[in-house]
Length: 373
Image (cartoon, one colour):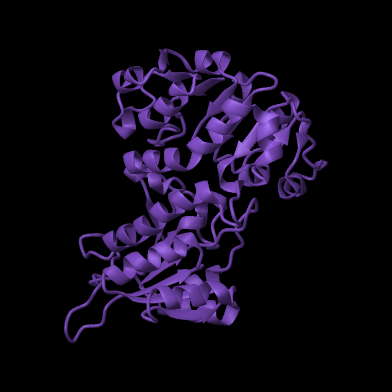
């Protein structure tokens, strides 16, 4: 199979879909990999490293798309990229179609593209590719939140995360006990913070209590407890994720008005619309804004801050799926791997994800496949 890796054009996206190690696996299995020159530069992978493992370096995005049967990306498809796709191609990416533009979805449908969204692929009731990015984002959320505790930042509270003898440590309140919340709780505990995690799933809360030997306070999430937690927080982490849907605004603007002056919010859910009513997307170069005296950090592509680690992590999680499709063909692989099939958003001109179809009020059709064996 011919596999293409374009250079990401989304603003400040520094990751690459496959590290050289992943390309090496595909080439040694007899497949061709076309990678746009400079695609790995921001992750510190050179064109020479890709050549050394057998990739073909091409010098335009157009050539990557024209020569490939499967295109692997990181960021959401742009309008320009959608226009480069050819009928019958397969594209892998964090598509996030539920919060994207309808004309992108329309383009995928009209060109009969098989669009597979990394964040929807399942394995043993988990989301394996999203999982690795969520682990990174959870760790970063504490590091980034702590950055804005310092008094050299305007409006900061000037607090020390772990406190000292006689001085209380910072209160970190995490909304959501999934992968992001778990990773954030672990990082915050390591910094000596008081950690409170809210979730509607008692099983998740028990898992955290057991994992951290009850050093984390767990609370059942409802409007009352969320409002209390928000008011108490020095650092609030928004870690709410609903598969294929826009994140609900569980933290209202009225709740934000009750927060401590200089408190920090890191809304990790912003790539799905955000779980804080006052949030809106920011960028790595201009990451924060202040609303109601509260510092908001709302960067959708946080893992790009550690682009090399993130690219390796994504390669580790995605390569088995790319290789299975390359070795066995798309239809055969989707028939044999139901978890991968759940990641398919469009196929043969149909929207095959019910939540996305509902979000855009278009017809949903169940994925229908025929074996090519």
